[in-house]
Length: 467
Image 1 (cartoon, rainbow, N blue to C red):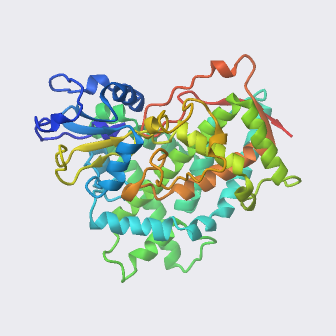
Image 2 (image 1 turned 120 degrees about the vertical axis):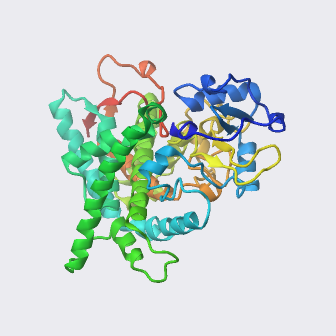
Image 3 (image 1 turned 90 degrees about the horizontal axis):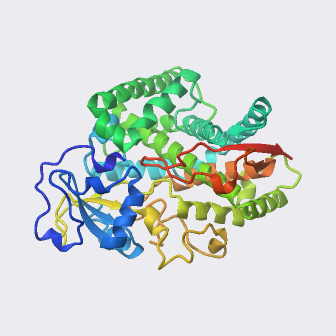
C-alpha cells in the first residue's frame, strides 16, 4: 500500500504535545514500520485492540493517525471533515497521475472541487451510468459465453477470478475509452499498471519503475484521445458517448472555470479505470467466494434471481431492483471485505487539538466493519442483517463505510454497483457452482492480497454447471 511510504517527509518527529494520543513505542528511524505487516489493515486492527481506536503511529518520518472505530471515523469524516479533507503528496501519484492532476488523490482545493464536480455531474451521473446499460449487458453476455467455452476446454474447471478481471476491464474500457483493450494493450493493463498499487513495489521499485509504467500509460491514453479527436474532426458520430468524449467536450467549453489540459484528462481517465476496475473485481471475486462457502446463502440468492427472471435468457437490469436478498449479500460482502480496506489516505490541513498540520490519516474500514459494538457476530457472513435495514453505501452510517464518507467519499459507487449487481445476478442465474474435486470450503484460503484493493490472495477456481 503506497499510501504509507511513498515519498519522504522533511518534518520532524511527532512532538511531545502530540504524544498525548495513544502511540505504540517505535524504533529509531523506522518508527512503527516494523509493526505493519504486508496486510496492513489486519496488523493495524490488532494494534488498535491494544492502543485504542484512535492512535498515532510514526511510519518512518511520517506521523500517521489511524482510525479504527465508527465513532472516531465520524469525528474525522463529519465533525472535522474539512480539516482532514486533503490528500498527502505521494511520489507514486505525482509520477503516475501527472503531478496529482487526477481527482481521487488531488490535494483539497479549487482544482479538486472542480474535477470532482466534473466526475459527479458529467462522468458518474445517474444518466451517464444508465447510458452504459447496453455495454454492461453485452459484456456480461460475453462473460457467460466465455465461462461455457472455458469449462468445456478445462475439464469443467474455470478460473472465475480471470473471467471477472476480463469483464470489469472491458466494461470500464468501453465506458471510459470507447473500446475494449486489444490483446497487447490488455496485457499492459493487467501487468504494467496494477503492480504500482502494491505498496511494497512502490517502496522498493523506486522511481524508475514507476516512470516506466507512467510512460507506457501516457502513450496508450494519448492514442485513444487522438483517435477521438480525429473522429470529431472528420465529423464521425460515435454510437455512444464515452468518458473521453465528455472530457473533450468540456475542454472546449468556455464556461469552464479552467481549460482542461490533455494531461488532466489522462489523469481523470486513469482514476476512472483504476478505481472502477479494481474495486468491482475485488467485490465480485469476494461475492463468489462467500457464496461458494455458504451454500444455503447461494441457494437463497439463486432462488430469488431465478424466480424474478424465470424464463428469460439472462437477467436484465430492470429486474435488479427486485433482488433484495442479493443486494443484502453484496452489502455483507462489502462489510467483511471492503475493496479498499484502508481508505485512501487523508492529510490534515491545519493543527487540530493534538494533531499537527500535514499528519497523514488512515481510516480502517475493514476494522470498522468488524466492530463488535455495532455488529452482532461480526466475523460471521449473515446477509440477513441487511434485510429491512436502511444502511446504504453513502457514508451516512459510520459503522458501514466501504466507500468512505464525507467530502472524499468515492463518487463512483453507483457505477461500480451497477456492474457488480448485473454480473452477480447472471452468474447465479445461469449456472450452479461447485468447487473442483479435492477442494473443500473449509480448505479455502481466505487471506487478502497485499495492496490498496484486496481481492482474495488465491485465484478462485470453480466448476460451473449450466442449467
